[in-house]
Length: 199
Image (tube, rainbow, N blue to C red; front, side, top):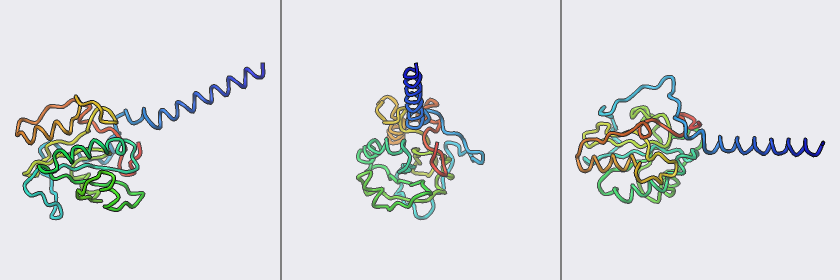
């Protein structure tokens, strides 16, 4: 009888541990990121002040908001690297690192993406673009208006080609067609919350 009780307790503890791990590593990231209390919404089409340091050469700007400590950010590095390789000659890619707990170098970030794209540590840019989680994609058209702000894909690993939202927005802008209409999975933020980039 005592063995059965101990076995039952051990099994319950194991099940609880599995559920906690599932929550920590998977399920909580499938929930929308909570909107901060002091969040200032930035509407699509708004003019974004990029400042003097952000040279654009009259090309669209793609900003990847990234936190090396955010699991969701880490999962989509290969996808973002692929976008940089495919569109880098037509779009100005920039990476904004949002992490207030650790210091990273420009070289460390560029190495992760295998690309010599400009890297910034300007947290104010997230507010300018209405970003409150990582990872997020922001596309600004050549006239500096917000064209797209949202997710890369509906899956964490960016494996569903039918929901490559950021890539669809790039293609639409380059073809100068009407901005595609996206569902809530594209435009509602998922991932790690700012400023500490925790869920």
